[in-house]
Length: 338
Ligand SMILES: NC(=O)c1ccc[n+]([C@@H]2O[C@H](COP(=O)([O-])OP(=O)(O)OC[C@H]3O[C@@H](n4cnc5c(N)ncnc54)[C@H](OP(=O)(O)O)[C@@H]3O)[C@@H](O)[C@H]2O)c1
Figure 1 (tube, rainbow, N blue to C red):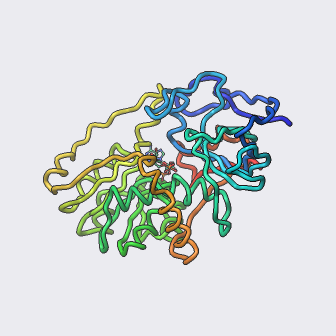
Figure 2 (tube, rainbow, N blue to C red):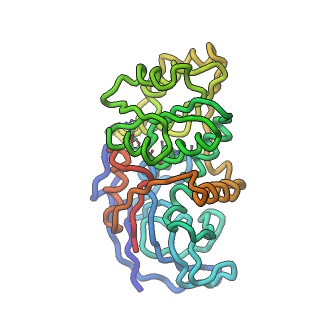
Figure 3 (spheres, rainbow, N blue to C red):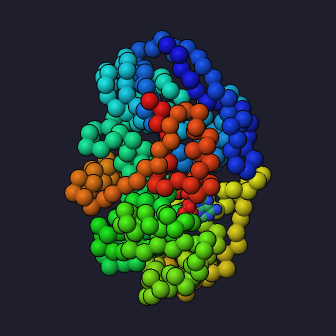
């Protein structure tokens, strides 16, 4: 049996090029005791992956040339030599960009079984996976959202952002989302539970926040950093919370290095007695089951909707990763492999 995989061939400079990867075809090895062989169904895309190609983002070891590109996936166990897994099990974990995965199922692989069969297994990479759990713990734990509060979200139509409208409503609060196109604005208000949306490229963001949230922002969920964070700081209410989740606005420097942005409104934290707090989603790993159980229940009850943006074919992974930096994805970006 042959496996196709994409390995790192060059470090990116600006947008990713197909030549930053090399497609390899190799034999699938015989399984050792304790291992499983998984056939990939979907692979996930996340902004942090660009840093895996550069320096590891302080989370992982930097990839070396010839290493299979790192990333999460979901697929079916087709051979098992591990008593904890059976053929036919659907699992998600650290697959890498490849069609078949041989896993030792060790802690590093973070290989979990998908137990639900209500919705597509692809959701294990989106709303019912680490992406959705980032929305859940970011908003409820770090943001400590209470009832009747005002939430502002940047990159609201992205993977993490696309659950935050409904998660706000579920807590009897309301969310306004920022995005870059009018098409995505419509998606936010018509399908993703946001009460209003702002096109930060064509509208006056400050004025529009005042129009939709005249008494200010209780929780700003920050996926982008930079100028939008600065404007959001100036809108905080007393005892506001800024959830520092990501900073994609500073990811796109041509050199691949982070661009820093000097905040002008940081003093608003003091003036409003607000907090700004970062978090790393895997610190909540022991509570992932709780988040998954709640999120699946809300989906079944029609309280939580989700949106996936799916390309097809392993060779389209570089294009799919670029879509995040080009603002092309609507909802969670995935690639269907089989
Ligand atoms: N703290 C954690 O543990 C943790 C865990 C997971 C993810 N994250 C972070 O959370 C954020 C969201 O992750 P995700 O996977 O859901 O990605 P995502 O939001 O789907 O990222 C892609 C989106 O980012 C926006 N974007 C791209 N370039 C931008 C720019 N220069 N300025 C403003 N917005 C820009 C675009 O949306 P628009 O077209 O609407 O602008 C694009 O569609 C990322 O920053 C990620 O690194 C953090």
